[in-house]
Image 1 (cartoon, rainbow, N blue to C red):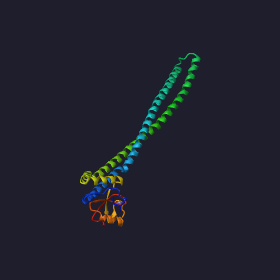
Image 2: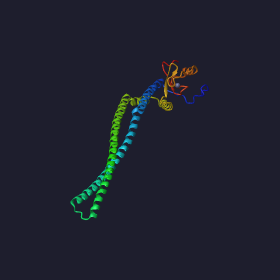
Image 3: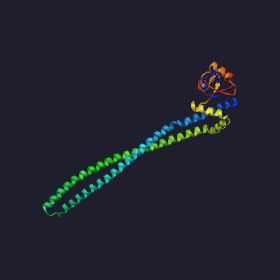
Image 4: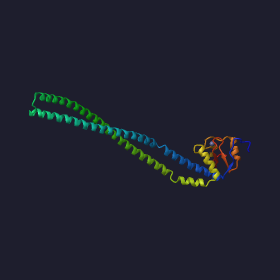
Length: 259
Ligand SMILES: [Zn+2]
């Protein structure tokens, strides 16, 4: 137990200085892979595609609603057409009977004339209904066409955004091509205990588990090492794996550490 450093709870780890330097290479590859992954995840196209897909679902519902309205109204229209046609046919038949002079009694004649008048009134009412249905159908058809046009626009936007996303992903993939293999090779060449500590710290400290000591500054937390700590670092054996007192990351000594 080193009484001068009560805050250092971790057991001292030793690793060849070359291995420590290679750990920085691994850290560099990991940082680039992490950046690539971050770029993949945060492409603006992801949010845009999600928004467009949501709008596409809503417009699909709108298309179905408008289509249902149209077919309901077309049915109503056909029924109204039949109603008008029936009244018109009956009025024509009555008129024909009247014109033919076949109606004998004055009473029948009066009834017939009365019916013709009432059929004409009925026909006018039914034709108004028919017209009103036609107008509603035109509105529904316009709404349906607008929904289809909107859907086409959304599909085109979706296609553009998807192509853009895929191109970005391909570019990022190209930039990191082979890096996974490099990482495996670098990791495999490191002592297991050093690698395990690095992975643990990397998970703990935002992806950075090891940092170089350059010009008396830890490149993990960017803080300058105080003189007491520098003295301890100078005195430490070259194969001792050091930790930054501030950020607790593995601190790797290099030629330009300023010791
Ligand atoms: Zn630090």
